[in-house]
Length: 470
Image 1 (cartoon, helix red, strand yellow):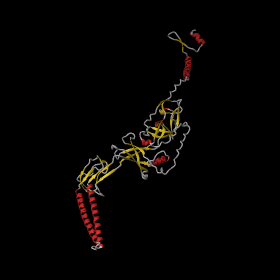
Image 2 (spheres, one colour):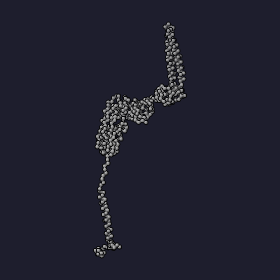
Image 3 (tube, helix red, strand yellow):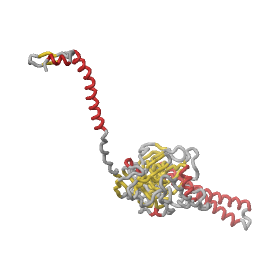
Image 4 (spheres, helix red, strand yellow):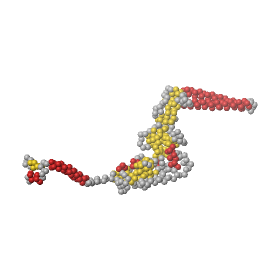
C-alpha cells in the first residue's frame, strides 16, 4: 500500500522514509500511545515476578531429624554399714606435767641431763651444794647423842630412887620427880632423832631427781646460780611432761550433748560415763583418722560462758610422735551402727525445701523422686526414704535429663569402698550397739508428698541413763 492510500484510510497517520528506504511512523499519536502503554507493561512484568515468587515460597522445607536421647550415667545405690561421726577440734596435753623445783636453797653445782631428752623417774637432774646441810646433819646427830646420855642418866636416877622408896630412903615426891625427868629425857631423844631425819632429808634434797618419766625441758637455772627452795618463792629448775599415754581435750557444744543424751535414752548409743566410747584423731598433716583411743573423761558441768562440755580422749603414744600442745581433729560416734543406702551427694538435686534424685526407668524415661537425705559420709549421702536398691539413679549428666524425657542411660557401679565408717579392724567400734536399718524403701513419684518415717520407740528412762553425756 502506498503512502497515499495509507493516508486515505488513516488521514492522521504520518510516515517518513528513512535512508534505508524504510517507512517509519512519526505522528504524535503514535508516540503518546506508546508512552501510555509502558506503565501497563511494567506492571504486568512485576505482577508475574511476584506471582512466581509467591508460588515458590508456599513450599515448606522438610523438618530436621529429631536429636538422639542425651547420654547420662546411672548407677544403683550401694548398701553399707555405717556410723555417723561427729568431728571436733582439740589439742593434745600430757597426762602428767611436773615443774621441777628445789626443796632447799643453795648454789647449783651440777645439771646432769641433756636438754630436751627423755628422762626416767629417779634420774639425777641437779646437784645443790650439800655441805651446809651435811653440817646441820652432824649437829643434829650430836644432839641425839646428848639426849640419849641425859635419858640414860634419868633412867638410872629413877631406878635408884625407886629402890630406896620401900625402905623410906626417898619420898614419894622424889620418886615422881625422877619419873618425870626420865619421861622428858626420852621425849628429848625422840625430838633429836626427828631433827636428824629432817637434816637427812635436806641433804637428800640437794640431789634433785626426776619425779616422773618423760621429756625434759631446758635448764632454767645453770650451775653456779643461787636458788631458793622450800615453800613459797621456790626457783623453777625445769619441767617434765609424760609422753605415753597422751590426752586430747575438746569442747562439745550443748546441742550435740543433748543429741547424745537422746540417743542414749533410745538405746541407740552408749554414753561415755558408763562405757569407753571409741575416739579417732588426726593431726593437721594427716589424712583420715589413723589414731584410735577411748573417751575416759567427761566433765560434770557445761560451762555457762561457752555453752560447751569438756571431754577427753586418751591415746597410746609409745614413740613420742604425738607432742603436747598439738592441734588435732577428733571424731567420735554420733550414732550406733546401722545399714543404709548411699549415693553420690552430687546426684541429689534441690527444689526449694525438697531434695530429689532423677531415676531412669526400664523404658529409658526419667522420673523424679523426692527423697529424705541422711548423714554425709565423705562423697556419699545416706538416703533414708525415697529409693530402693534396684533404682538406676543418674549420677552424671543431670543437666541433660528432664523428668518424662528419654535418655541414653549408661550404667556403672558406685565405688564406695572409701566408706568404711565402722572401722572393721577396730574392736572398740564394732562393740557399739547396732541400731535399726533406716527405711530406705521406694516412694511414690514426685507428684505425691513423701511418706514420713515411723518415729523410733523411746526406751524407758532409767536412773542409769539420766545425765548421760557423750
